Length: 185
Length: 143
Image: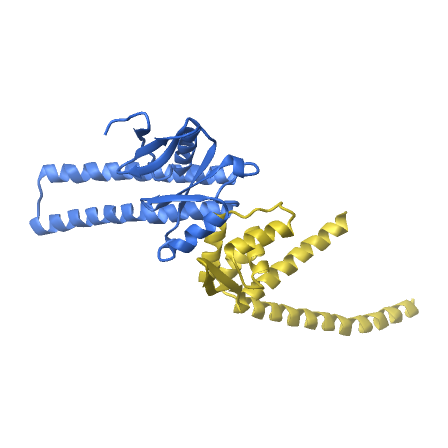
């Protein structure tokens, strides 16, 4: 699908810890006259052409809402936030800056900002760690069953291991940076 | 000389029972306090004593049945618009407090969940109010 004058799609990668950057990106796009329509796959953002406007975008990550989504959305709606959709566990909200006095966010204290960080960590990092452990367990079982295993398999496991360690280090650091940014605000 | 020693002894004998009384009272008060605190779960104490401003206003408002947005409006009115609670914070706090049994779900009205404070919630609110009253008294003393 090609871009035409009324729609636009852009590929953008935001890691697990970069919801703040994503919010800013979406706000900037809306200011330029492109309002978010949907997100798919690994980060394909679809926009519709609109009047340029300062609209604040916010992401929440909350699994508590499962089973009472209507009530969840209603609370945001009551406070003037438009609910758009869910994408990989995140709920997307927006509200025009003209309807706020000053900058408004969906969180008003640091405790709830950090709570959200912990929810993201549990929801997205823990599964990664579990997969990681399964991989190691699997490798150990393989060695036990066959006694030896080929250099290729061994090399692959070491490669994945290194990749994971790097990923964890990066995410860990990003979580820490976010934590600091909340604490030092 | 003799007189002053006698006076001192007399004074001490007066003081000693008084001291015992004080220590008795203190021990009693202390054990009462320990008892009260032990009844409250360590987790609850850690998270809610002291608690966030949002948490405090939620408990304060939920002495009467209300839903999340109702609390937001009430707090805005109570603080002359100075505190505007956000929905993400409100939703998160309500689910956390319900899980910790400080508040309980009563019923639903037009997709809005109505809550009420529980016995435990009232105890926690009471502790917090006393703490804030103490702060306020101390502020008055230095003013």
